[in-house]
Length: 336
Image 1 (cartoon, rainbow, N blue to C red):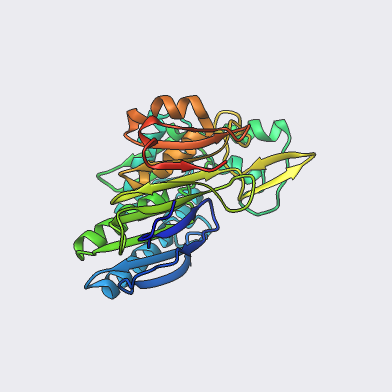
Image 2 (image 1 turned 60 degrees about the horizontal axis):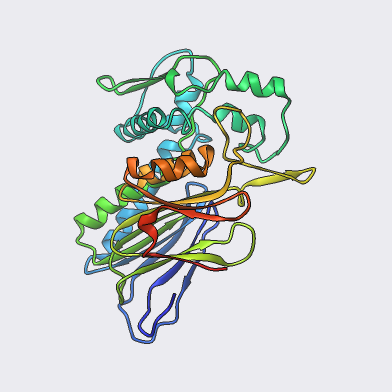
């Protein structure tokens, strides 16, 4: 993984908790503008290089907080909270950001046959993943909650800039796309400010921007989903978005069975076809949403459809056997 001149940053890519571990540098490199903040229910590390690095960093933090304020389903002031509270009652006028994010979510829902569905909230709730009070619901509870899961019940009016949920009790959650979408917005800020280089790490979602301070590749480590440390490294060149979904961060165990927070919209139960998957893409929102859809649909779907979406994927099946698309051959290093 390393060489005499490697100075890149190693990022453990995984859901929720993120560690940025500097690799030892042999030569001096420019000092970045750096900030670590807590937003979108995760720790976010921001590292920016370039002439306008401090201004750029400030704009990035502002944008993250702006999008978080709009999408936080627990905040009464957010667009999402207001949409959910008015389900089955009336349309809610929302910001252009919220409307665009929901539009993109619905497009991916259609393209994945409903595997990515932002109306999964009611199912996540009965399993305790919204409150932290984990439990196994009854089959009756699951079937009742599933009746409130359908992306087809989300009605958008672009002209009036409104969102409406058809049924009382329906709720949406943008947690599966908001971080990736935010990284897209951050890339625009970096472009506008002519940033030289940047690395943004948002709890399972990473943006590598241009080239590292020294060297050619960003070395992005894939966390071992069933152990300590990393199990592989992606050597990323230039600007890319890397998104990971896995069953090893938010989960509970009952009678020896692991139940993770990524729910299948088809069964109303935690998805259990693979252990984790990491998507490399040119669009943050797309990689974020697809990492969830691939996790729900499994290895075969991911490998057979990655090219269709213009992304690459690496993951681990239930036996911890790795799988990845052929275009990753030259940039991935897996450890035994």
